Length: 359
Image (cartoon, rainbow, N blue to C red; front, side):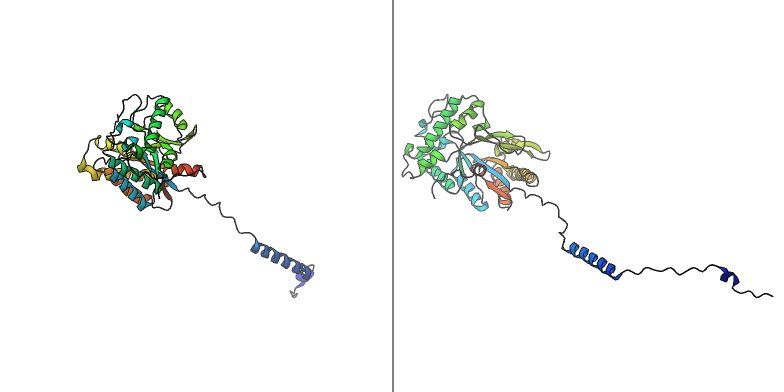
């Protein structure tokens, strides 16, 4: 039997083994150096850029003001609040409170007889002296003294000449208050203060007309705070007068808008009728209204928030209690500044002199 061997295999063509290319040593070195250079470059490259930082929000400004500025105790209380919180206020003074019963004839309102006023006059010469002292102290502490005209008449139908006459009466009575009332000694810096310090005005009843805005710049005013706006708004400047406006803010469980002033809350809460038994409830409600309006701006666009008050303690002082609670919380915050209208204007126009009196 033929022997089976590897004859079939031996008849196949022989295949030479495949040679595996060996890297040239210089090529290996070049590749290694290139890799190293890439690694080093990557190590020293600028790190990925982080997103652009968000611009810092401006501080929240709160503008608190008082109309008429009559009661001495409320002057003292408001100044004490300012000292506790670092706030500066604007006091819109009615000039009839610088006239005693004996000197009331010094004031003549447009279209009225001498000695007529919707809000009366100071009770006595001593009360005038005390009020003048409070004005001096407030100004020395950095507060702003503005004009609320004199007799608190509604000037919506006044002419430009009527407004100029009222402004002239205010400035004359303020400047000559010591002399008119026979109060001495008159401080050496008083007349200079009276001539230059008052640059702001708020109309009684917030009642204005076209003639008012024609008269304001001619009478030397720089701002008016008689407006009302649907909500907090940046004050525009027209014909040289910056126009501030009390905003309407949500009040109560239904968030019904109300002008941000104690008098308007008084009518909203109790119909303008004193209800002292509900004073705590009204105070809490007013505080929550102020705080909600503040929070909306603080957490939002940070438009200045204006709040207006009177020295009269409506509903047993409910709105002053709300103010003290509110200011005690927010005016001390690092991102909040409670300043006067005059302060606000000075920041828009740095370099303008600030009038002060006393020391």
